[in-house]
Length: 130
Image 1 (cartoon, one colour):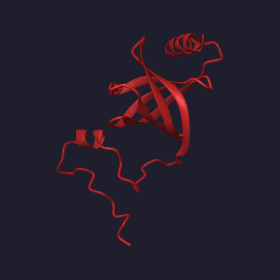
Image 2 (image 1 turned 180 degrees about the vertical axis):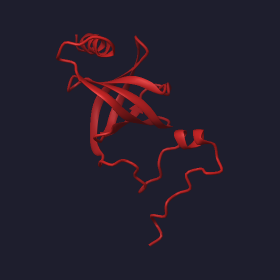
Image 3 (image 1 turned 180 degrees about the horizontal axis):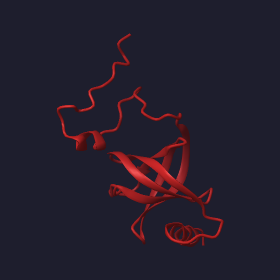
């Protein structure tokens, strides 16, 4: 069948359109498979802007999230998995409201001692659980 023909990735369009568009079904750029999950998360923009989200699925390299507010994530942000107590430094890969795809850059176990970005994620995580 011709169902898996590689879609046009916007050679004549701007690179920005590629960034915004969600990959077509059946076209998977990730090297690792997605695992469907349904986890409560917090997006952290800057030091203290917090937006609730649902982590819809995850792979070794990133996440697909559903935003619960109409606030598209900036290019770089924190993502806290409330249940597991893990904070991730992420980069937005695509946005298709209310969903967004993220690349996981660094992960931190928030039950351990931290400084810098991880300490801020840890503070927000502890406050959310309180």
